[in-house]
Image (cartoon, rainbow, N blue to C red):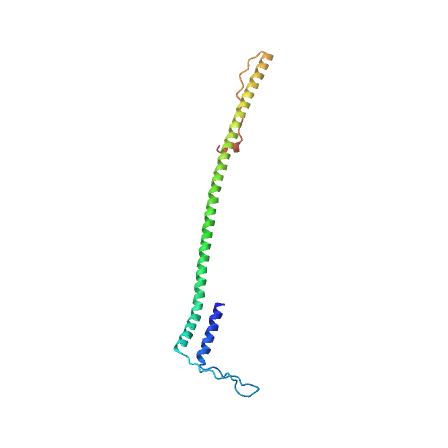
Length: 171
């Protein structure tokens, strides 16, 4: 829009400076002679008019530079906005990674605690089972000794054999 206005003013000034006198007036069709208002004074183009024309040329030439400059400014602003957005998103990603690491550490600690609890519980059950088997073996040996009247040697302790895969893995 602005460029169009500059071009219109430029064409006007070119026409003004090219035609120092107004164009001839139209002839009155009824009378056959020039119309009555043909007595306009002769126009003289001054240095001021030429300076105004030169100014219009400079405005036209500067218009492209002005538009390029405005575009570059807008591109710079857009680039800065994108950089700020990228920095903000990177900070958010880093924050989320830190939160994820904290949650992972907490989960690992919880798992370790649960694993320790399960291992301890299983060891207690194993000890109770072995003690019960030992007691049952003693009761059975005593019952057989009373029934036969013979003395038997105590049975070796019965122990739970751990699974090879589980015993190979470190606790």
